[in-house]
Length: 290
Length: 327
Image (cartoon, rainbow over all chains, first blue to last red; front, top):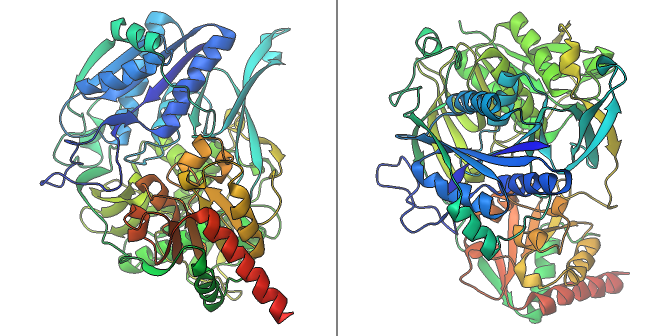
């Protein structure tokens, strides 16, 4: 099975976010970078699928030149190939991002054969847009489901294939009212996965060394086609190209930190002697459970 | 006059879920600032026409084709699209739930429209402005959302929710979308009940959360005991679930659950942003931690300083003692 996993380079935020003076981005001078936690599970799942079923795994990202680090991290965990869609300038909006990734997947498949499965994180840790994977799936005309925390495969009789069978992904996610709901997606398919799908491994030293020597295929994309200065809607955007015959956005204007909602905690006690004060508090706010 | 605001609602029987109540409250306020009507779209069988809605919904677009159950994201997006074709809305609002975000993303992709997820507020104008959450809410983004129809989902627990009433009687209009069989391929084909008994983390009035300070899977027994006494639920930080001390379904945080209990008791949790965004909607937070300088203290209302492995059992014992005395 050939698996593609799409990831995004994001800063490794600790206890508190600091912004650049222009309010356009996070001050990352003192931060490391990583990929979103959901995507770490996507990388692990791609490696496991190829380990158990054969085939090949590819990791792809759209981002700055430095995102090569995250591609090498993924290859250190066992991903075979890496593709960097290298961008410059301000961050890309989700519509433009999805259109570029869909184009790149078409090009990859034309050159190297089809992907049976394409994995995304359910949402990126930084922007939380909840849409790039679905947009890519719709552009490619493939079935898609988000929120996946369990994955297996099966072969099903397929009337359209005569006596043949078709590979099905059995995907599981949490139901809104509790418990789990299952979905069946005929391959090729797209999945948005969530942390909890698996427990990602740590990279081995030989894995890191191998990853350092591997090629990263680079595709230069440059600045976002949506333009740096707000993109009006409608015709202007539509004329930008057939592949992104869509209105881009939303357009980031700036970032800011939310107002602090709480002040420092009131210390109501120290050690086990605080138990009485805690139970007084529980009774006062009506949650003592009686 | 501007077109109406159309809000997509999720419900169980006649009752909207909490995030849908937040979405309809948000949509009502947007409709008011536009001076336009509020319309809703829902999917459901018999009885859904009696949905308990807040006041102010003028029209309910209701799709009740049997093939729409169970959930199928692309098809449900088609229903919202068909309602939008009928209503010609200025904006479509959805709850910030798995399904709300998913349905709007499908609709946006099919119609070539932008979609702003996790929105806290919106200001219509020549160019629409939205404030949306990034990093689960620890950062805010000001953005422009310009399109013939503005699609947005409401940040979970980021806005208040109006109470539904029984005397809201919108005009009910049937929606009959064109159902493309290829879009019905991805749908719920099975359902397994929740493994654990008891109250769920998202419904519990009290949640006891444990982090690295709990020390082991076995250490959670003390937290379970306290939660049982309070009729509450136990959750864990990302550290606790990644180390396998708790199942991943119990993770509170940006990549797990967003909870909003009356009281959250954070035990041995330092307070990384990833965790804070999952628990900050709690009405009150009590932190139990050895380190008075840990980041959790800046979001907690109350704190007990010390070792949770002695403090938590002491609280359980005190609860029992008072119960026995009262009895």
